Length: 324
Ligand code: 8YV
Image 1 (cartoon, rainbow, N blue to C red):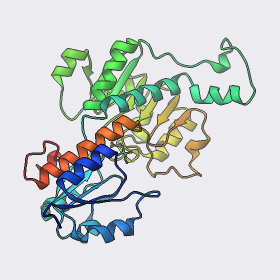
Image 2 (image 1 turned 135 degrees about the horizontal axis):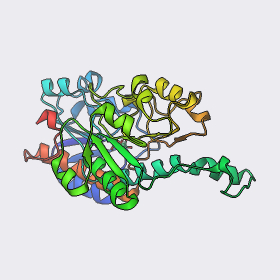
Image 3 (image 1 turned 120 degrees about the vertical axis):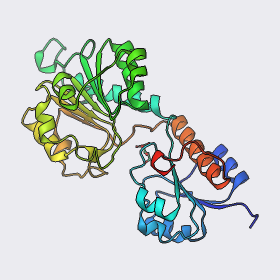
Image 4 (image 1 turned 30 degrees about the horizontal axis):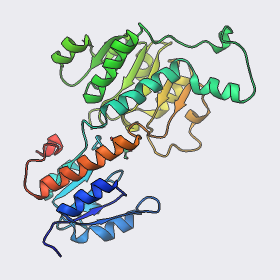
């Protein structure tokens, strides 16, 4: 080899990312077709010092097969796939891609909120099925977004981008709940801190943007949905497992809430038999929060640079906080 660190890239990357990687690493790249099979990943990592991937669990199964691994670079901002205890024990760094997808995901969250509020997918299908009643028929009425109250659960980078859209684009009141207060966001955006229960009972729209951690797993349960207003709309663009999905199904079918907009699910792909897929008041998207070409290119470049920075012994700046 050329003395450069050996890395495996588990998905195709844009040309400029490939060029960067080849300059700094001795790299092998999975070019498809389709998604890399898990057993192929396992067979590739044996000699690798770095792996760049997304959507794979970084657990004992993978780490036991990667004796030379020094860093795993996840091409995503959510790094719940990392077994942080095991990585720390094995001295394997983990990096992720914060900061480059905030606006893309916030756009999608706002779009999903509007789609659920004004029933856009349902009424698009209505017209395409040959129906027509002018919007003055109350059967087609939706819910206002402007001047309504938005509750943001998890006020991180994406949450602040969403708050900007809600406050300055739609004149909304914005409450937020977070592990810690964000006085600068309160000053700059006019958002107000609220306790979890207070946010749930005081919001017309609740958007879940918290990362999936042991503390947030299943946080939206039956009690939480029952606390929401009967005319409220719930949006989830974080991780499906932050929601007890059977409670959400009951909330929607029994009218504890008005509707939902989902980009993520407890199981993905969402099972064909999921009741959510039969509900007119539930908008269902296929985990497309960051699905924009430029954004994915920026994520891949950041993931590559973060991995190389660890391999070259520089401070990468994006090692996940718990592994610093
Ligand atoms: C996915 C995401 O990671 O960034 C995140 O946390 O959820 C998405 O960008 C991406 O779709 C790859 O799984």
